[in-house]
Image (cartoon, rainbow, N blue to C red):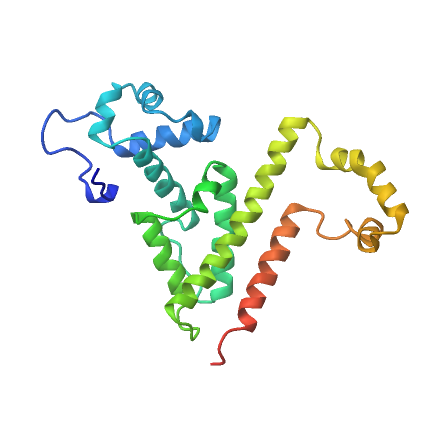
Length: 238
């Protein structure tokens, strides 16, 4: 089967009856369903119902669910860098702001984080994001491969952090226990381990930990700032 990039195909077919809805309407419906019910709720039949169309008519716009997911990702990553965003010219400030917007976007659309960690196809908003990201770190004395690795490292941090946040939210939903309640449940076993004297660093953690960066926002900012500081420390002298 020969496949081609979705964006190489015209939105409306040259022949046959023209559908009375758009890719944008299809994408909006798909994002709405996935936000509310998860990616597994997406099907061509469900989307046809959402937009009031026949299931087969959707295939005039897309070849199947994979194309729908591509449309969804492209639409949502646009929120990482809204149209009209003006870069400050300071790479740390701009890359940090991008990371924060990416995290908030993934939290609004929980289905996105696992997809964002996979290989990325070329699409209008993803290429716009890549162009802007490269401009942020251009002029730092880095080669293009180094620039790509630097940007990728920042996004990997954001993606990993968000997936941990989402996993914690899922654990709360599944067990009904928040983090404090779950920690209390672990305490008897943890105290028995401490009493053995075999794990001095675990003992230190239990005695001294949990006092700083307890808030999720503080932990995200701490990690992001340390990452950007580390990148800065390794930049070529200019």
